[in-house]
Image (cartoon, rainbow, N blue to C red):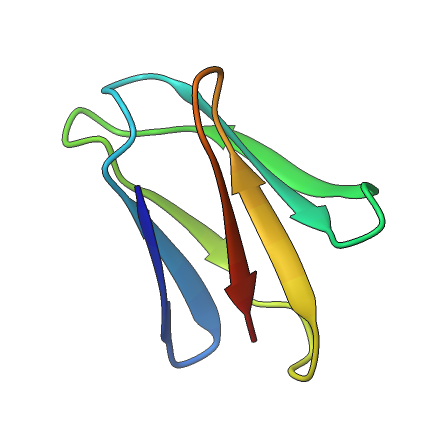
Length: 66
């Protein structure tokens, strides 16, 4: 799974199609969740820059800096 920033959004690629994708703050607080599309991608509004976040599915967690 990969996370990239595109303007004001975070783009998550590599999840399984229709898999639940969750966005967390570094302290474990959930910010948002949504289902990946048929291509295994999900788009979230990016948090204010200057921190560490986590994106998680049922079988993988990725840490990223924003």
